[in-house]
Image (tube, rainbow, N blue to C red; front, side, top):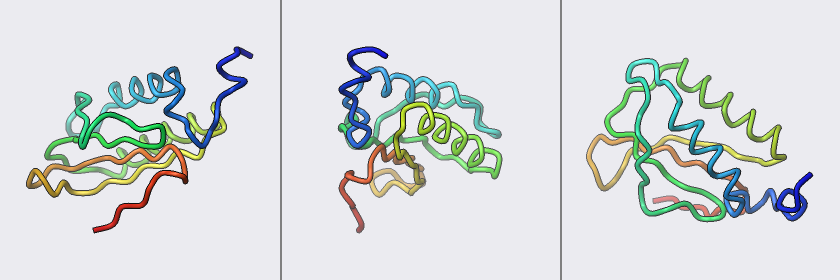
Length: 113
């Protein structure tokens, strides 16, 4: 076990660059059923220690996409002992664009509205 793993806080997961890089690589290489790989494009700024949003553009999700994304986060959670989840929502800024919010921790702020 490395020194960085010993001081890793699963409630502030993206403070650990190695974990953030692993998640980003998995998302960058994810093959959406209808669109293939979608380049990483942050929405509303860079990741915080708790969460980040990616703009996926105009996209239609399939059941296969949701299953594959869920498998990514289950794998990460098992490996790192985190409680990472994701949700999809429409962008308010760019008509029809879809955003994936990756919440690395229940400490991430709630934002409704």
